[in-house]
Length: 225
Image (cartoon, rainbow, N blue to C red; front, side, top):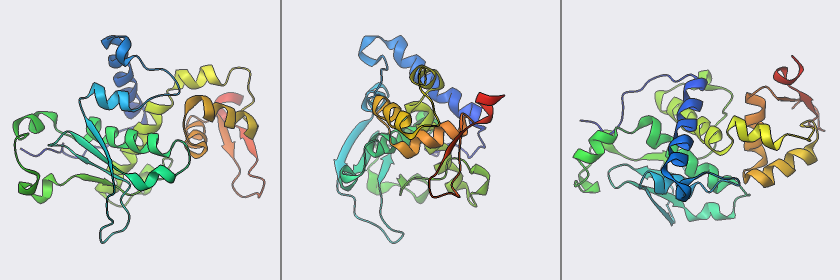
């Protein structure tokens, strides 16, 4: 039995539902796991009984590795070199790996094979490797199943870190077309500005004109319709 689920296509709504379901389950578990913002993603790892280790992960033949998940060990390894990255990058990286755990790992198989040594893994059992951020707005452009799964995990991360209802709360009294207001929201959410902008664009709350040097922001369809 493979530790990875067979590949399946997920609609964005389905991924968002999965992320919200994790947050609901955490809230039901009690005060210890009740989500609050800025969101401490390590609480989600604790909720799933996943270890989180920070250590240096050397690059492989394909380049730098930001993080990887070792399903059989129930462990997420994060490259300590990303500690120098801007605010929110570490949170997004951990949330991305948790996305793999929720969407792509066969939990029944990990229980059955949990006593196997990592050195005995077959190629199909190798860990997920995260090399960096993906374009969360272009799932259909990915050429391979692996890249599609990476997009799914990153989209899950955005939904987990920035649930729609929390964004609704944070945008009250703010104008999303002002960068200063977005940076205020970023601080309250504990995410990177790029992740916030991507999430707001995906919800069609804003539209960012990338063709101009000023990178002007306009109201999205969801707010003007």
